[in-house]
Length: 317
Image (tube, rainbow, N blue to C red):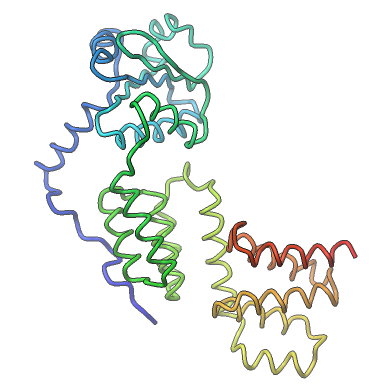
């Protein structure tokens, strides 16, 4: 079994109190909470220099908890080209009344002391990014974090697991709950058979980031890896199936074992053969495992399109 070196990232250089205070000070210049007393300075006057986004929120608002972290992340990525001011409407009802806020989250953008744009509700991150980029004056440059995650994913695609793990670990030094880095590192662990480490890595994700296709895919990958470990030796299982082609359980175990070794096409063939012989066997277990494989591979994998066509021909024959 391969061990991923440096899987527990050391503390970043310059992570002592002085460095933390410097980082906090820089962040405070871009993102801050305001009230009626400082509204003019934080919004009206500040927007004469750079655009200012106002995020109206409240502690009880679920969609606000999804939107605010996205706004904070995107504002940081713009590196001073735009600022974010957060207003708790429970603590600042006068400001909320002035803006006629009737539902939250509500977002306004100010430029040169005047409102210029805005939106209501927790939009998808892609739309929020367009909103922020437009205010910032053009296309956003990829942040160092995004570039490092991209490098990690490229290394994974090239089966450079150590290089990928190092890239994701560097991101987690700066952002311990970064979704892309945690998912990437979990994939590294799965690829070297360290399933419990993969689970522990995903456990670091906050609850509000768990409802995402990438999370579902890696969780399905972990579940498949655990089943593959229990399935047994592919050679022995293939011999068992050859001796009794109607032994669906042996064929299912063979499919799982093959998937565990990376032979996805072979796994699909065996699962489809079970479906061909008895689609409803064991409450449709073979079909369910096929769907899991499709989810793991993703919609852009050509093997998924082929597998879905073959499965459909069996479902509607």
